[in-house]
Image 1 (tube, one colour):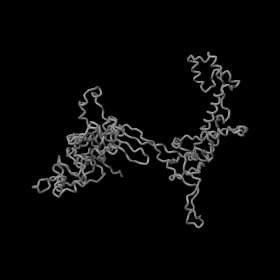
Image 2 (cartoon, helix red, strand yellow):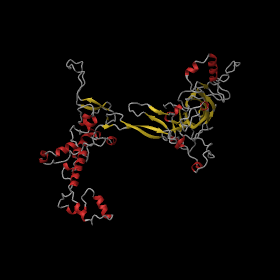
Image 3 (spheres, rainbow, N blue to C red):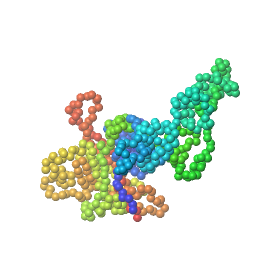
Image 4 (cartoon, rainbow, N blue to C red):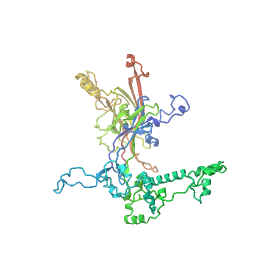
Length: 568
């Protein structure tokens, strides 16, 4: 059974409009193209997918009086913050919680101690409540429930601790350690330790360049064994005076390479027999996926060559990525249209100019009419919400425009006679021009007297406000130029649609995805009067300026998805 269709309305952002050629060439901006006014917006064009947005996604610039979408605003980072100071599960990317490894005894048991209600002490582990993964699977436990990141940096898989660079430096100064023979391998040398050892080794070599080996004396004179050999070789080929300067030759000394792990030497272990045997025993189910390996941060506490992050039991907790709070500016006038609070704990906005507070919202629902309703207009049968539209049978829909501002607006609608695309459906807007009352307070209407309230109610229903008229003239009837219903700050009009037939001629390509959806492009023009804004900063407001009003206008395209056409 097909899913019921939900009507929708999308608004086109003006940033996707094609700039006329004469405007690019410096012509008059008021001279439109010859076919610009006659060209209707095509919601099925490939470019339309990047310019249509729901009303909740759009912003509004008060200086330019234009709609702004997420693609055309300029973003600026306000602050960085961590969404969760814990870690993510390396298996299912769920949040990890710090829990005690020891199981809390049941206080209902007789053998339970008296202090069973007290919180348990360490050790602690990171636990995922979704896939039940714990850090104990890789042998990692923590002594304290806080400072997890600092503790994890000192632990290897299996629970063994690692020596920091400072501890290794102090250990090398110990006379008893120097008397010991060097370790047979360097598998315990991690990234940070190897870099610290290499840095200390080469700094000692640069400080004492005269400790030259006999076999490298000739190369040392030329500077080939120095860390800066590239720049010296380039000076040779670019005409440098290194070979001709006798003082430079005497200053150069040979530098040997690292010989043991304490100096930064790390021998690659190419024996992978243990990994092969583990793969045979556990199979592919025990190996980590590509997404899990990519999500793993650089493991600084493990040997860098041929790392062990190939199996699930070697995956480590993943720290949360930092997130940002961003402000948004208008790309034309650089006016701030959205700016959040810099505090991480709050989700409030200092400035947030959403389009829903400036332009009317449009809601759509199908209208059910009786067989005898209307004069000269075909009526639709009982409306089932979300039911497919019958081809070549008229269907009526109610468009409700709700005014969010405190001024009365005049709305003018324009829609093509037939929808664009292969299957052209006929569209008729019964009332293309109407006014919507201001968004006044609800108590203002409640405080009116009975005569004013009855007169307002009859006006909203479309009845005659004349005292001599004794009946209803146009209530709940389809008439051209008449609205269907009126409220405090909303107006409902009727749109008649005759869906096209989806029958395909022989040789025509089949229906594409969502080609059976009936979408109506509609041009909306909103006009209202507002108080004139003072342009001079610091000027005292006068009575004439406060009473002066200016006319404002906003025009845009919108797309109304009313339903799916039934396929026969």
